[in-house]
Length: 198
Image (cartoon, rainbow, N blue to C red):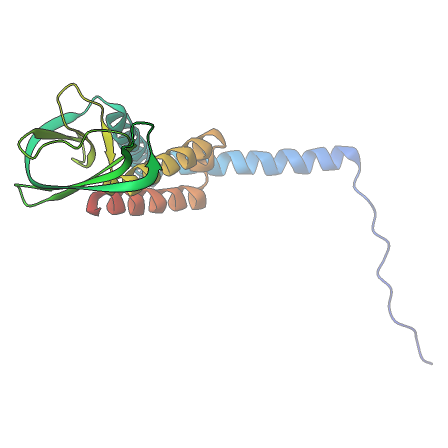
């Protein structure tokens, strides 16, 4: 006699009390895993590294905004690069000023303004942040307006981008999950290495 395919027995749904018990059990298990993870040296060390990186990036952005370490330099060649716009007085806009300094370095000031081209004899100043020593801005007179250095663009972009990522990660407690904490640490480490070697 040929029997038909076996049918699964009907599933009996859980009662509300059983569902509450399962949810409580899973939440308690998750809390215990988190508590065990928070006691490890890995959790403490990686979070400390990520917090230190966050403050390094904030320091770079703050030093770009002004309170930085300025050092004086002398130029032996100044090359202005003009843009397409012309002022009412007939002066072309200065997009960038390329300065070849006596210390052998080349500095490109992003100006994008109608300014007088400085003389070669004048000093110019370059600001550096305090922790990494990255060159961020420059100015021609001690009291003059600061201009961003072209080489600092990538450093500032990476710093601000990772600041936002770190804030989001700490708001949503992603540093309390081993996988996301490792990912955040790798991103911070790679960014710090990239900024240090730019």
